[in-house]
Length: 116
Image (cartoon, rainbow, N blue to C red; front, side, top):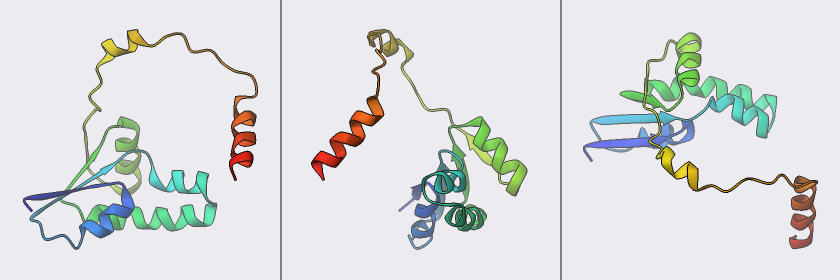
């Protein structure tokens, strides 16, 4: 392959074994913070240690967030290229008014219990 493009930290470790002269890693959000929020502080800590290692496996780093770009620059001195996500903002006008529903999350949890 001319290039391989991995999306997020775990994919970088697979990308390492792909025969390609160019390796690109795209990160959307601070991965270790996501892991900590979803799983635990312990796993978040492991993910935090994996992040710089994954950056070293890449020739180029990209993100669609200036906040992520700044975070990793300050923490790991990682040089991310900022590539904003392409959005057709004219399509937003087609969205009808969003109505907030009371107990929406509670209803989803109830539905999940029924399905399980």
